[in-house]
Image: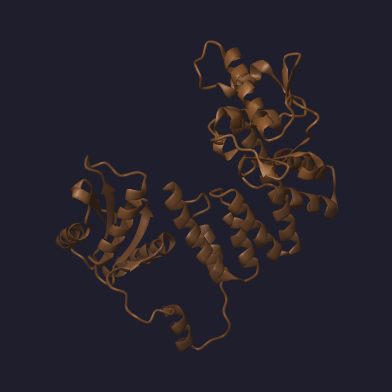
Length: 396
């Protein structure tokens, strides 16, 4: 495309401008040059009115003379463009409208994506599905990802996301109807990659179930819940017993003897791990519910302990590399402080849950002291707070 004198612009998932095989660089991807080029090239077909361009470029500026600021930005941009061999008049100003010159055609991925979606909307049958699929594969992620704090960028990003999601919904429904779960799985994996933290993993899980890959579906579910907790500090919207129940209800195996089944349930673990059993949140939830039923029959004493990492002021820590390191250290300290029969899981970036079985209130205090001794922090500026409740719901 470059050899034909076209300016190739990528705005989905990244921001790059390529001319004659070379990328045009203008410093930071959120610099005034990058922002100006993003606007002019995105609206290269019809141009953009000067006042609107000033609003978009200087929305966070308190300058009393935006006209002067714009002239300065335009002047500097022209100099940079001339250095890479683009025509001196690449940026034009006609009748109050700033335009990109027609002498240098622009091919922008976002506009190509939108054109493909619009064309697919007018088609039917296999042709429509094929074009929707091509459009989805053309979508590479959020619009101008380094400039998402700007209003116009957020608006365009939201518009393109809606188009992508609409295409995905049509394709998923089509593959589901045709029973093409292999293609559906690949589609779900791709969507989760280009739009992470958007619940597209559910498409992959459904496709895995359709292919009877039950263990893979369960593993993906658990990894996804952990990933959302790591990145957002919350569980994904789809997390709940309905997904787990669907997976469990469809898990089937060939006829086996009970000793073979027991070997499968035990897994491949050959050595007894030290301390408590560290598991994912869905597994922890299942164990908790089983214990609730056991208590109703046998009257066992079980406590739920919440361990929270706090800063020097006693406030929960929120973000950062230090918290990530401390979280790993706390998990190790907890597992080495509880018994082999106790269960541990991470609930959020700064919190862990512990199920203490056949334990007294006094034993819980001893366990807290063990954790504190094993949990080493820098200069004691951070620490751990503990909250206890009995599994029968009595708060202590």
